[in-house]
Image (cartoon, rainbow, N blue to C red; front, top):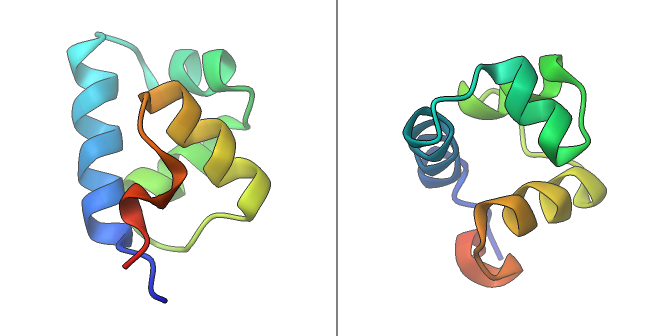
Length: 68
């Protein structure tokens, strides 16, 4: 299995911008640190499982969505 971090990053960025939220505001809503939000949007690392589940729940997608 692989994690499609590019698509995840793009979708996260687009959703945050659609909601007109800053990174900090979105991170607060999700319950993660704002620095995590930045690295997720930039696609610099694969998130820990706990962070991933929080983010996809906030995004409204199934957790399998970005797993190939």
